[in-house]
Image (tube, rainbow, N blue to C red; front, side, top):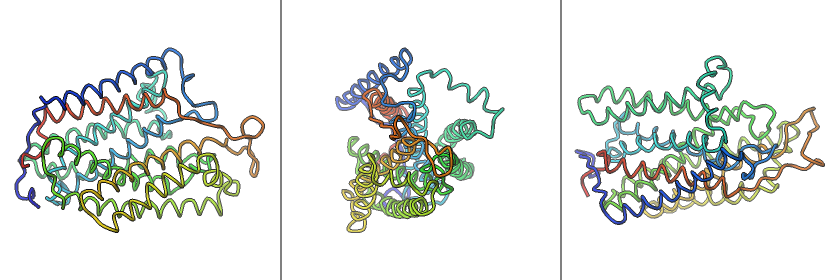
Length: 390
């Protein structure tokens, strides 16, 4: 590929009307998110669509999506710095940068969702005393992940530290696997929730991370190259598309196996899985996750791989992984846990809980996306992330 032999990096000028226009749009999103964040501090979750049975809503769905995309993006950087695939070198630095931003965005979303953000520090203060808690363990995984990624990114700008970069790249990729497996374990270790309790869930989280990481990376990078007047090598995009195809197939297989096990041998006779398949959230599972977000992009990628088809498949894959996160978080809470084998204590009059996404939750997620957009654009202007050849 044309960048394989020698890659020089530059900053963007960042003085165009389009650049400042995007910054302004992101600032509006941040302002809307801050308004709802402050409202949450003042009034609590009364403006959220959550309730006593479904305390986690859209922001938590966004959190695990962002953590997964971050882990996937970081693991992809190892293609160059660990496995020596020079054809991906032009996008490896920026993939590490994006991985750091996405995890920071996930943590910021948690703060925005808490209502009492100062209590976030309790994990750091009391976490070492309770390392049996996956929340406590993950707080250290996340902070270590960010610190290691920053050092790893710094070494990529030092040609005399290639061996160190390779070691750090391998360590960062391994930690990224543990980070998202740990996030999956938060759900997978909860025996009382049929849709959550599964030894496959940490593995599925890793595969979904790779799917969302490569798909989001393709979309962001092709857009960035286009807006900055650079021509992205189609072979590079098609190469990433091949990885995306494999990850989608593995993800589909794991989802199939996991739900078959739940249906035929799950807790409570698989009633919770039936709720997922035919309940009020079944459209998200069948329509968005399986059909639109998995089967269609697989079909597109098998039919033909070029710049446009890989971009389209990536967009659908991002939607599919987000829907997969939603199908896990929301239906998994909607029917309360079994208190006695074969019997379930449900909501009022035996009905499952109902959750509807609220404007306040959307605003918080949009605010975080706006902040990440600003940080990304400022990073491109301040640091040499993009290849100079166009």
